[in-house]
Image (tube, rainbow, N blue to C red; front, side):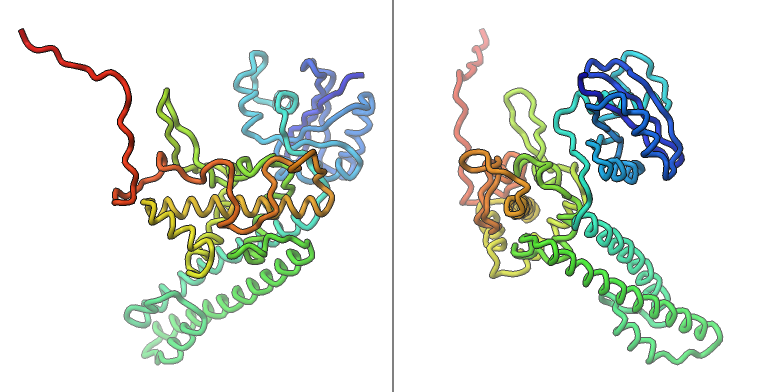
Length: 402
Protein backbone atom coordinates (compact mmCIF):
# COMPACT_ATOMS: atom_id res chain seq x y z
CA UNK A 1 0.00 0.00 0.00
CA UNK A 2 1.26 3.47 -0.90
CA UNK A 3 2.07 6.03 1.77
CA UNK A 4 -0.81 7.97 3.30
CA UNK A 5 -0.70 11.53 4.61
CA UNK A 6 -3.04 12.30 7.51
CA UNK A 7 -3.69 16.01 7.99
CA UNK A 8 -4.85 17.23 11.39
CA UNK A 9 -6.57 20.52 12.15
CA UNK A 10 -6.07 20.96 15.91
CA UNK A 11 -8.30 22.99 18.21
CA UNK A 12 -8.56 23.48 21.94
CA UNK A 13 -11.53 21.15 22.36
CA UNK A 14 -11.28 18.81 19.37
CA UNK A 15 -9.05 17.61 16.53
CA UNK A 16 -10.13 16.76 12.98
CA UNK A 17 -8.07 14.34 10.87
CA UNK A 18 -8.34 13.63 7.13
CA UNK A 19 -6.36 10.90 5.36
CA UNK A 20 -5.18 11.45 1.77
CA UNK A 21 -3.47 9.13 -0.67
CA UNK A 22 -0.46 10.23 -2.69
CA UNK A 23 -2.73 11.49 -5.48
CA UNK A 24 -4.65 13.62 -2.94
CA UNK A 25 -7.70 11.36 -2.96
CA UNK A 26 -9.56 11.39 0.35
CA UNK A 27 -9.52 8.06 2.19
CA UNK A 28 -11.41 8.97 5.33
CA UNK A 29 -11.85 11.50 8.10
CA UNK A 30 -12.35 11.47 11.86
CA UNK A 31 -13.03 13.95 14.64
CA UNK A 32 -11.94 13.32 18.23
CA UNK A 33 -12.35 15.28 21.42
CA UNK A 34 -9.22 16.68 23.05
CA UNK A 35 -8.78 14.22 25.89
CA UNK A 36 -6.43 11.53 27.17
CA UNK A 37 -8.01 9.02 24.75
CA UNK A 38 -7.42 11.13 21.62
CA UNK A 39 -4.18 9.43 20.54
CA UNK A 40 -5.57 5.93 21.04
CA UNK A 41 -8.69 6.74 19.06
CA UNK A 42 -6.68 8.20 16.18
CA UNK A 43 -4.28 5.24 16.07
CA UNK A 44 -7.16 2.74 15.98
CA UNK A 45 -8.76 4.69 13.15
CA UNK A 46 -5.48 4.94 11.19
CA UNK A 47 -4.36 1.31 11.58
CA UNK A 48 -5.76 0.63 8.08
CA UNK A 49 -2.82 2.55 6.64
CA UNK A 50 0.43 1.15 8.08
CA UNK A 51 2.56 3.46 5.91
CA UNK A 52 1.27 6.71 7.28
CA UNK A 53 2.61 10.13 8.16
CA UNK A 54 0.85 12.67 10.34
CA UNK A 55 0.84 16.35 9.33
CA UNK A 56 -0.28 18.68 12.12
CA UNK A 57 -0.91 22.38 11.61
CA UNK A 58 1.18 24.46 14.03
CA UNK A 59 2.61 21.50 15.93
CA UNK A 60 4.29 23.93 18.33
CA UNK A 61 0.99 25.66 19.19
CA UNK A 62 -2.46 24.12 19.58
CA UNK A 63 -1.21 20.87 18.11
CA UNK A 64 1.78 20.62 20.43
CA UNK A 65 0.47 18.03 22.90
CA UNK A 66 -1.06 15.84 20.19
CA UNK A 67 2.15 15.92 18.15
CA UNK A 68 4.30 14.95 21.13
CA UNK A 69 1.96 12.10 22.10
CA UNK A 70 2.04 10.74 18.55
CA UNK A 71 5.85 10.93 18.44
CA UNK A 72 6.00 9.10 21.78
CA UNK A 73 3.81 6.38 20.23
CA UNK A 74 6.37 5.89 17.45
CA UNK A 75 4.56 7.83 14.71
CA UNK A 76 6.16 10.13 12.15
CA UNK A 77 4.80 13.66 12.53
CA UNK A 78 5.39 16.75 10.36
CA UNK A 79 4.90 20.35 11.43
CA UNK A 80 2.92 22.36 8.84
CA UNK A 81 2.92 26.12 9.15
CA UNK A 82 -0.47 27.88 8.97
CA UNK A 83 0.78 30.05 6.10
CA UNK A 84 1.19 26.99 3.86
CA UNK A 85 -2.28 25.77 4.80
CA UNK A 86 -3.88 29.12 3.96
CA UNK A 87 -2.20 29.14 0.54
CA UNK A 88 -3.49 25.66 -0.26
CA UNK A 89 -7.00 26.69 0.81
CA UNK A 90 -6.81 29.81 -1.35
CA UNK A 91 -5.66 27.98 -4.48
CA UNK A 92 -7.92 24.95 -4.04
CA UNK A 93 -10.32 24.65 -6.97
CA UNK A 94 -12.73 22.37 -5.10
CA UNK A 95 -14.70 22.93 -1.93
CA UNK A 96 -13.20 25.97 -0.23
CA UNK A 97 -15.72 26.38 2.57
CA UNK A 98 -14.04 27.18 5.88
CA UNK A 99 -14.61 24.17 8.13
CA UNK A 100 -12.49 21.70 10.07
CA UNK A 101 -12.52 18.83 7.52
CA UNK A 102 -11.47 21.15 4.70
CA UNK A 103 -8.77 22.68 6.89
CA UNK A 104 -7.44 19.21 7.77
CA UNK A 105 -7.43 18.29 4.09
CA UNK A 106 -5.50 21.47 3.29
CA UNK A 107 -2.93 20.50 5.92
CA UNK A 108 -2.47 17.09 4.28
CA UNK A 109 -2.21 18.62 0.80
CA UNK A 110 0.39 21.14 2.00
CA UNK A 111 2.42 18.29 3.52
CA UNK A 112 2.24 16.24 0.30
CA UNK A 113 3.37 19.14 -1.88
CA UNK A 114 6.10 20.46 0.44
CA UNK A 115 9.45 18.70 0.43
CA UNK A 116 11.21 20.30 3.41
CA UNK A 117 8.73 20.33 6.26
CA UNK A 118 10.29 20.00 9.72
CA UNK A 119 9.72 16.67 11.43
CA UNK A 120 8.54 16.78 15.02
CA UNK A 121 11.01 15.10 17.38
CA UNK A 122 10.99 14.19 21.02
CA UNK A 123 11.85 17.25 23.06
CA UNK A 124 15.19 17.66 24.80
CA UNK A 125 17.27 20.52 26.24
CA UNK A 126 16.04 22.89 23.54
CA UNK A 127 12.45 22.62 24.79
CA UNK A 128 13.56 23.38 28.35
CA UNK A 129 15.47 26.43 27.13
CA UNK A 130 12.47 27.66 25.19
CA UNK A 131 10.26 27.38 28.28
CA UNK A 132 12.59 29.41 30.48
CA UNK A 133 13.28 31.93 27.71
CA UNK A 134 9.54 32.50 27.49
CA UNK A 135 9.39 32.92 31.27
CA UNK A 136 12.23 35.44 31.12
CA UNK A 137 10.45 37.40 28.39
CA UNK A 138 7.30 37.57 30.51
CA UNK A 139 9.23 38.73 33.58
CA UNK A 140 11.09 41.35 31.53
CA UNK A 141 7.82 42.80 30.29
CA UNK A 142 6.40 42.88 33.82
CA UNK A 143 9.54 44.59 35.10
CA UNK A 144 9.30 47.24 32.40
CA UNK A 145 5.70 48.02 33.35
CA UNK A 146 6.51 48.20 37.08
CA UNK A 147 9.59 50.37 36.45
CA UNK A 148 7.57 52.79 34.34
CA UNK A 149 4.87 52.99 36.99
CA UNK A 150 7.45 53.61 39.71
CA UNK A 151 9.14 56.32 37.69
CA UNK A 152 5.79 58.03 37.12
CA UNK A 153 5.08 58.10 40.88
CA UNK A 154 8.58 59.38 41.64
CA UNK A 155 8.04 62.24 39.20
CA UNK A 156 5.00 63.22 41.28
CA UNK A 157 7.10 63.23 44.47
CA UNK A 158 10.40 64.72 43.25
CA UNK A 159 10.94 67.18 40.45
CA UNK A 160 12.38 65.30 37.49
CA UNK A 161 12.29 61.92 39.20
CA UNK A 162 15.28 59.80 38.19
CA UNK A 163 17.18 61.13 35.22
CA UNK A 164 18.80 57.79 34.30
CA UNK A 165 17.62 54.21 34.11
CA UNK A 166 15.72 53.31 37.24
CA UNK A 167 17.05 50.68 39.63
CA UNK A 168 15.89 49.49 43.07
CA UNK A 169 18.98 50.98 44.74
CA UNK A 170 18.52 54.44 43.23
CA UNK A 171 14.77 54.44 43.85
CA UNK A 172 15.21 53.39 47.49
CA UNK A 173 17.79 56.11 48.08
CA UNK A 174 15.46 58.70 46.57
CA UNK A 175 12.46 57.54 48.62
CA UNK A 176 14.47 57.61 51.87
CA UNK A 177 15.07 61.32 51.39
CA UNK A 178 11.37 62.17 50.91
CA UNK A 179 9.42 63.49 53.88
CA UNK A 180 5.71 63.58 52.94
CA UNK A 181 3.89 66.72 54.05
CA UNK A 182 0.34 65.47 53.76
CA UNK A 183 -1.97 62.52 53.26
CA UNK A 184 -1.65 62.66 49.45
CA UNK A 185 2.15 62.59 49.46
CA UNK A 186 2.10 59.84 52.10
CA UNK A 187 -0.14 57.71 49.89
CA UNK A 188 2.11 58.33 46.90
CA UNK A 189 5.21 57.37 48.87
CA UNK A 190 3.56 54.18 50.15
CA UNK A 191 2.50 53.33 46.61
CA UNK A 192 6.06 53.90 45.39
CA UNK A 193 7.41 51.65 48.14
CA UNK A 194 5.09 48.84 47.06
CA UNK A 195 6.18 49.24 43.44
CA UNK A 196 9.80 49.19 44.61
CA UNK A 197 9.19 45.90 46.40
CA UNK A 198 7.59 44.46 43.26
CA UNK A 199 10.63 45.59 41.27
CA UNK A 200 13.00 43.84 43.67
CA UNK A 201 11.01 40.62 43.49
CA UNK A 202 11.03 40.69 39.70
CA UNK A 203 14.79 41.27 39.65
CA UNK A 204 15.26 38.25 41.92
CA UNK A 205 13.05 36.12 39.68
CA UNK A 206 15.06 37.21 36.64
CA UNK A 207 18.26 36.17 38.39
CA UNK A 208 16.76 32.76 39.12
CA UNK A 209 15.72 32.32 35.49
CA UNK A 210 19.20 33.28 34.32
CA UNK A 211 20.67 30.68 36.66
CA UNK A 212 18.33 28.02 35.29
CA UNK A 213 19.22 28.96 31.71
CA UNK A 214 22.93 28.77 32.51
CA UNK A 215 22.50 25.30 33.95
CA UNK A 216 20.50 24.03 30.98
CA UNK A 217 22.93 25.49 28.41
CA UNK A 218 25.87 23.97 30.26
CA UNK A 219 24.12 20.58 30.47
CA UNK A 220 23.44 20.63 26.73
CA UNK A 221 27.16 20.91 25.98
CA UNK A 222 26.59 23.61 23.36
CA UNK A 223 29.66 25.35 21.98
CA UNK A 224 27.73 28.48 20.98
CA UNK A 225 28.82 30.17 24.22
CA UNK A 226 32.41 30.18 22.90
CA UNK A 227 31.39 32.87 20.43
CA UNK A 228 32.19 36.32 21.76
CA UNK A 229 29.02 38.07 22.92
CA UNK A 230 26.96 34.88 23.21
CA UNK A 231 26.13 34.28 26.86
CA UNK A 232 23.70 31.80 28.38
CA UNK A 233 20.64 33.91 27.55
CA UNK A 234 21.53 34.44 23.88
CA UNK A 235 22.57 30.79 23.57
CA UNK A 236 19.34 29.59 25.17
CA UNK A 237 17.24 31.80 22.89
CA UNK A 238 19.12 30.56 19.82
CA UNK A 239 19.01 26.87 20.72
CA UNK A 240 15.43 26.97 21.99
CA UNK A 241 14.07 28.65 18.87
CA UNK A 242 16.23 26.69 16.41
CA UNK A 243 15.44 23.34 18.11
CA UNK A 244 17.11 21.10 15.51
CA UNK A 245 19.79 22.62 13.30
CA UNK A 246 19.23 19.87 10.74
CA UNK A 247 16.13 21.80 9.70
CA UNK A 248 18.45 24.14 7.80
CA UNK A 249 20.58 22.73 4.99
CA UNK A 250 22.96 25.69 4.90
CA UNK A 251 23.92 28.86 6.71
CA UNK A 252 21.96 30.82 4.10
CA UNK A 253 18.75 29.04 5.09
CA UNK A 254 19.43 29.74 8.76
CA UNK A 255 20.15 33.41 8.01
CA UNK A 256 16.86 33.68 6.13
CA UNK A 257 15.06 32.15 9.12
CA UNK A 258 16.71 34.60 11.53
CA UNK A 259 16.06 37.60 9.27
CA UNK A 260 19.77 38.43 8.94
CA UNK A 261 19.91 37.69 5.20
CA UNK A 262 18.82 40.50 2.86
CA UNK A 263 15.87 39.86 0.57
CA UNK A 264 16.02 40.33 -3.18
CA UNK A 265 13.65 42.84 -4.75
CA UNK A 266 15.11 42.78 -8.25
CA UNK A 267 13.31 43.59 -11.45
CA UNK A 268 14.77 42.79 -14.83
CA UNK A 269 18.54 43.27 -15.01
CA UNK A 270 18.63 45.44 -11.87
CA UNK A 271 19.74 43.42 -8.83
CA UNK A 272 18.60 45.08 -5.62
CA UNK A 273 18.72 43.72 -2.04
CA UNK A 274 17.02 45.25 0.96
CA UNK A 275 16.73 44.74 4.69
CA UNK A 276 14.65 41.71 5.61
CA UNK A 277 11.80 42.06 8.10
CA UNK A 278 11.00 38.38 7.78
CA UNK A 279 12.14 35.49 9.89
CA UNK A 280 11.89 34.82 13.59
CA UNK A 281 12.15 38.17 15.34
CA UNK A 282 13.13 36.69 18.70
CA UNK A 283 16.07 34.90 17.11
CA UNK A 284 16.96 38.10 15.28
CA UNK A 285 16.90 39.94 18.61
CA UNK A 286 19.26 37.38 20.16
CA UNK A 287 21.72 37.81 17.29
CA UNK A 288 21.37 41.59 17.59
CA UNK A 289 22.33 41.47 21.28
CA UNK A 290 25.44 39.42 20.46
CA UNK A 291 26.45 41.82 17.68
CA UNK A 292 25.95 44.91 19.86
CA UNK A 293 28.04 43.30 22.61
CA UNK A 294 30.88 42.80 20.15
CA UNK A 295 30.68 46.39 18.94
CA UNK A 296 30.87 47.70 22.50
CA UNK A 297 34.10 45.75 23.13
CA UNK A 298 36.82 47.35 21.05
CA UNK A 299 39.18 44.40 21.41
CA UNK A 300 36.77 41.90 19.83
CA UNK A 301 37.08 40.59 16.29
CA UNK A 302 33.50 41.62 15.65
CA UNK A 303 34.35 45.25 16.44
CA UNK A 304 37.30 45.07 14.04
CA UNK A 305 35.00 43.74 11.33
CA UNK A 306 32.48 46.50 12.09
CA UNK A 307 35.16 49.21 11.85
CA UNK A 308 36.41 47.73 8.60
CA UNK A 309 32.95 47.96 7.06
CA UNK A 310 32.63 51.55 8.23
CA UNK A 311 35.96 52.34 6.56
CA UNK A 312 34.69 50.79 3.34
CA UNK A 313 31.89 53.34 3.24
CA UNK A 314 28.99 51.59 4.93
CA UNK A 315 26.73 53.38 7.39
CA UNK A 316 26.58 52.27 10.99
CA UNK A 317 23.30 50.41 10.52
CA UNK A 318 24.52 48.65 7.40
CA UNK A 319 27.75 47.58 9.13
CA UNK A 320 25.69 46.27 12.07
CA UNK A 321 23.57 44.21 9.69
CA UNK A 322 26.68 42.76 8.11
CA UNK A 323 28.03 41.83 11.54
CA UNK A 324 24.72 40.22 12.48
CA UNK A 325 25.01 38.01 9.41
CA UNK A 326 28.50 37.00 10.56
CA UNK A 327 27.15 36.14 14.00
CA UNK A 328 24.35 34.12 12.41
CA UNK A 329 26.86 32.12 10.35
CA UNK A 330 29.05 31.51 13.39
CA UNK A 331 26.07 30.29 15.44
CA UNK A 332 25.06 27.96 12.64
CA UNK A 333 28.58 26.56 12.37
CA UNK A 334 28.73 25.95 16.12
CA UNK A 335 25.36 24.19 16.21
CA UNK A 336 26.28 22.01 13.21
CA UNK A 337 29.57 21.06 14.87
CA UNK A 338 27.69 20.12 18.06
CA UNK A 339 25.22 18.01 16.06
CA UNK A 340 28.08 16.26 14.28
CA UNK A 341 29.80 15.42 17.56
CA UNK A 342 26.52 14.05 18.90
CA UNK A 343 26.15 11.82 15.84
CA UNK A 344 23.04 13.60 14.58
CA UNK A 345 24.71 14.59 11.31
CA UNK A 346 26.40 11.87 9.27
CA UNK A 347 29.24 12.85 6.98
CA UNK A 348 28.26 12.75 3.32
CA UNK A 349 31.51 12.82 1.41
CA UNK A 350 34.21 15.50 1.64
CA UNK A 351 33.04 18.48 3.67
CA UNK A 352 29.97 16.80 5.13
CA UNK A 353 26.74 18.77 5.10
CA UNK A 354 26.56 21.84 2.91
CA UNK A 355 27.38 25.00 4.82
CA UNK A 356 29.18 23.30 7.72
CA UNK A 357 32.24 24.85 9.22
CA UNK A 358 33.88 24.13 12.53
CA UNK A 359 35.21 27.66 12.90
CA UNK A 360 33.19 29.66 15.41
CA UNK A 361 35.04 32.95 15.10
CA UNK A 362 32.70 35.64 13.89
CA UNK A 363 35.31 37.50 11.91
CA UNK A 364 36.92 34.32 10.60
CA UNK A 365 33.82 32.59 9.26
CA UNK A 366 33.39 33.41 5.58
CA UNK A 367 29.98 32.73 4.02
CA UNK A 368 29.71 31.73 0.39
CA UNK A 369 27.83 34.94 -0.32
CA UNK A 370 28.58 38.43 0.93
CA UNK A 371 26.73 39.30 4.11
CA UNK A 372 25.87 42.74 2.83
CA UNK A 373 26.26 44.21 -0.64
CA UNK A 374 26.43 47.86 -1.44
CA UNK A 375 23.41 47.45 -3.67
CA UNK A 376 21.23 47.19 -0.56
CA UNK A 377 23.18 49.34 1.88
CA UNK A 378 23.38 53.08 2.17
CA UNK A 379 27.05 53.91 1.76
CA UNK A 380 28.59 57.25 2.32
CA UNK A 381 30.49 58.78 -0.55
CA UNK A 382 34.14 59.13 0.42
CA UNK A 383 37.59 58.72 -1.01
CA UNK A 384 37.69 54.99 -0.33
CA UNK A 385 34.62 54.23 -2.40
CA UNK A 386 35.46 52.70 -5.77
CA UNK A 387 33.73 54.54 -8.59
CA UNK A 388 31.27 52.57 -10.66
CA UNK A 389 32.47 51.69 -14.15
CA UNK A 390 30.81 53.39 -17.05
CA UNK A 391 28.08 51.47 -18.83
CA UNK A 392 28.92 49.93 -22.13
CA UNK A 393 26.63 50.41 -25.07
CA UNK A 394 25.74 52.71 -27.82
CA UNK A 395 25.37 56.32 -26.97
CA UNK A 396 22.27 57.92 -28.26
CA UNK A 397 23.02 60.95 -30.49
CA UNK A 398 20.32 63.50 -30.70
CA UNK A 399 19.62 64.48 -34.24
CA UNK A 400 20.26 68.11 -35.03
CA UNK A 401 17.27 70.27 -35.78
CA UNK A 402 16.81 70.87 -39.51
